[in-house]
Length: 243
Image (cartoon, rainbow, N blue to C red; front, top):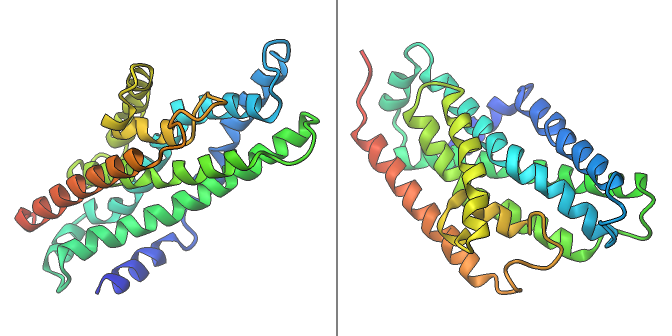
């Protein structure tokens, strides 16, 4: 049944405006980061790594979490319109599979977004005349940032399920990202879901903030994933049709 739910959610992506956001939004922090890098070459002397710090500074602070929140709000939008929630609650499908089906689609779109971010980083590096290829570390950091969707995506999908407004969950994600910088600065990044992406992507850092030890990062992701998924499934089981 889960596979059928995933296929149903994938059908919503065809000709969807989500793909416009997936392509267009990451271009903004890429331009901002590149411009900032070119205007501070006297201080940013580590080449590819310096460019990475500027790209991830803007991307992780203002765009990554709200972009995932946008994906989540869009996936719940149809269910919140008219009486579609009633159709969902009376369908012969386990509510667990409904939630996990949407979450699988969020992971898919997030992966596509991260791949595009990597391409933009490489293209901007060549535009800045940086030699050679992008460092292998940055590819690892992109993948770790993608894994962070297990925490952020699950939380935002839960919020979008509970809040009928399209924009409010996106605003919460933006506030969570800004607050996340405070957690990172205090070394508490593993205790706040919006900080996990910053730690995973090594945001605004050229040395690995995780120190090469990914296990605590993965444990934190797993805890948030299980916690928010359990909360969402429990709420769905207690939800009733809307008059």
